[in-house]
Image (cartoon, chains in turn blue, orange, red):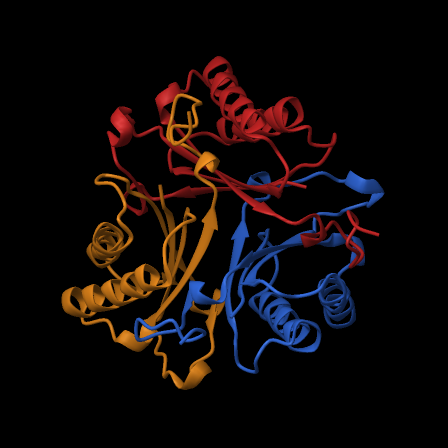
Length: 127
Length: 127
Length: 127
């Protein structure tokens, strides 16, 4: 059920963006117990001037490769699951794209199970 | 109060996108008891490679016409109202645009009434 | 921790958009007690036809300069803090850009403290 919005500055290849999507999906399966194939993602490139992040907030040095991942998902994950998700995303991006671990900003938005319709106008997660 | 983010792949006409916005607004009036004229919508076209959805999740066959509708609204709607909204969106898009019912993904994000300002820097929904 | 999504119609300069981002950040510091340097913002320009708002909802006359500010932040702010934020955004935009107060639509989405990772795959706001 998660819907991911992934934002980054312009300048990366389509393959690079595709890999980000794959890593976020894999991390959902591994860490959040998301169902297989539950993949809905919007990736948006922005002119650098419209993609704004502090280069040092919380003592973390961010570069122009910084990306934002905002994931809307059903409520009910534990803090440990969320932590495992953050780590899986960052590790996967580092391994597959050499993206610096400092450059990954993640935010989760939780909603009720009834707040999803996957097609056909039905609320598939509730009876 | 709802704010709708509507995302789809590039390739549809401005009229087609406009009709999506109208259908989502009409469904809010019909099913969610939204006030008349309470219409705030952002529609975004994406390169197909950056608009990612599983073609079969939950056994629903999606095509390249798939759209995502993410609606932020005040909390308080019942499950039946949400269901009626999903159905109204899907029925309206099918009737007006021949959009396949399988191709409509919807997500709701609920917030408190005080979380809206419609202008003038005031929180119009609370005293 | 807030993540701001700022949307507006095409036609403003990069400087104009940059100033919107600064005002939203300043208002977070002033009114929401956000930490210094906690600034993460995505600004998106849209073709006018895809950026839709009612010109009169709630009796507020909106012009083509209307902007939407959607801020995801940690829960826990009082209604008065939210009100102060709305006012600070609107006042700042009016002072710095002559943006009409009627033209600022704001929505807040609240999440748990554990729902943020600022880098390194950690949940910095929880132990």
